[in-house]
Image 1 (tube, rainbow, N blue to C red):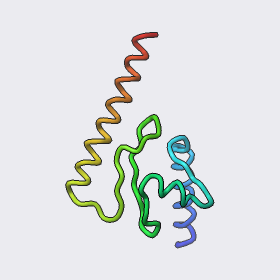
Image 2 (image 1 turned 180 degrees about the vertical axis):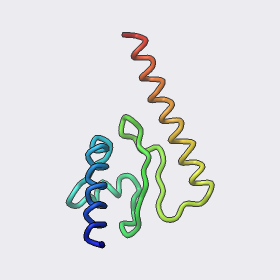
Image 3 (image 1 turned 120 degrees about the vertical axis):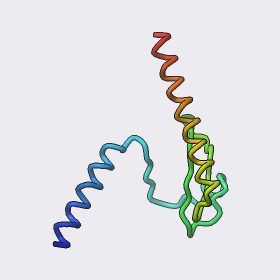
Image 4 (image 1 turned 135 degrees about the vertical axis):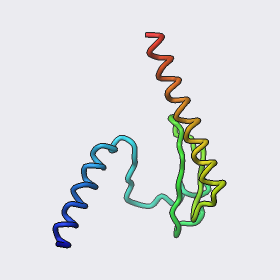
Length: 95
């Protein structure tokens, strides 16, 4: 049963990766200098970055999120999403 479960889990992950392939980045190798540039000083814990369509970091956090941090992330992500939708709507109306 565990072999079947692990196969199904792998298959689901593979499908998700294929669907979302254009929205994530995987890098193998040292990124120490880049991490320092954006303030990611602790390489032991996980980091979350919300990046706008121009590649600028708009929100960044690490460790366990407090309630106000989650609210801040959601507010910022809604604003970024709205700006992308507005830009998309404007470009459709211009063409």
